[in-house]
Amino acid sequence: MTVEQMPSINAALNTLATILLLMGYYFIRQENKQAHKKCMIAAFVASTVFLACYLWYHYASSLHTVLRHPVTLLNYLYYFILITHIILAIVIVPMIFITFNHALRERFDLHRKIARWTWPIWIYVSVTGVIIYLFLYVLFPQHTEKKLKISSSSPAIEQKTK
Image (cartoon, rainbow, N blue to C red):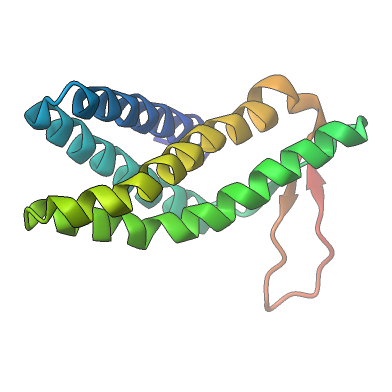
């Protein structure tokens, strides 16, 4: 696995988490608690592996990626999705742990109360992660710039690469 492959792997992990979250929602609506539990644990594992891969990618890569589409509306849409994704990705982590904690301790009344907030935010973060990947690497790769990160020890100006 190379650094260049990581965005695709991360998108696949987000897609898997999304599918598992949707299946978990379906199963709880069908009152199939065992299938719901398995899907949600699997979604948690997929999201955890994603987070580890994402952090490794940003640690190992000397580049960061930005979208510079000539249609301003698409830039605004992309950055709106990106900013809300980042904020909610930070918010969702403790919410997932609290939701899981209530379920594992069989405090299902508390689990249901927080899961009503956790699930939609988690699904939003998973879906928008895939959308961000699609913007950068599938839909508009010709308008995606990879820039060298500025080192704290070097006052160098960011250099564009393609």
